[in-house]
Amino acid sequence: MNLLTGVESTELFGGDVSPAVRRLIEGLHGAPPEQVVAVLWSVTLTSPQSLAVYYLLYKFHTGRGELDHAQRAARRGLKAAAHAAGLNEDWQTVQAGDANFDAPGPARFWLFTLKALAFIGLRRGEREAAAQLIAQLRRLDPADHLGFGVVEALLQGCA
Image (cartoon, rainbow, N blue to C red):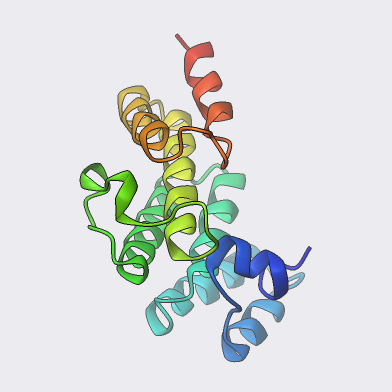
């Protein structure tokens, strides 16, 4: 699966990553972690609309246990996706009718990033914040198309 092009990119982020950003990211294969982080964060400054970069950043940092950085990347990605989808930047005020969260695009990525923030919050020991995010996910995605139930089960298992 190539998250930067084709069906996967459209499904998760609403479209392909620009060729310039794609070249930068593809050049990171096998690069040391410091270079990966530097390039990805730089891309968020030069191409803040490239939602895939935020995903790569929060996955990278979470995988390395760098939860503060992961949370920062996810929050910035959430803000960029909200802007692209025409959603309020305050995730708590977003209502189910504000966007089609089932359709590929920025609104779906926004919802997916809420799930990521819930997971990151849980890993950081922020149970109440994770619970609030999951409650919002339940309101916006009652059929659980994006799988927030996994994070919810982890939260309940920590009780």
